[in-house]
Image: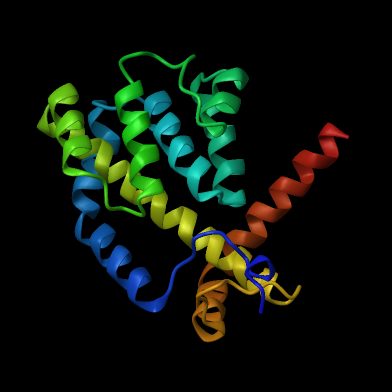
Length: 194
């Protein structure tokens, strides 16, 4: 099969899914604490999530987090710019985190030591750890969404390049109720716009 005949978005395989899911489950108490602490505002959190989603290109997360960002007070221009990897209209205090989130996604979760040091230097250990947990969470959501989209793409003749039908089916069944609800919301919103 030619390279352009594959679904190109980053998706999960068995090993990476269980590895990332285990890490998130192991960090669940920390994640709850980050969400409640207020160290990272809701707007900032949504900007980080959009920066990651812009790289991973998950249609479901883009839709949901665009709405969440707008609801939290982000402007449409900010959302569009972040999705285009442009942080110029964002709060300068947040740009280091947004660039780190983008870098983390582009390196598939293997950022350079220098970039991590810069994040810690800029925000301090606690807030940098909060940012890294948010990146970890949205990455799991992005890759789950892409795996589900890749499963559907398989039936249109474009399977994920390194995919597994069995694993994609497992993820599709696991995520099916959520995707049904989200697809319905997306279609209803599209009808209102037309």
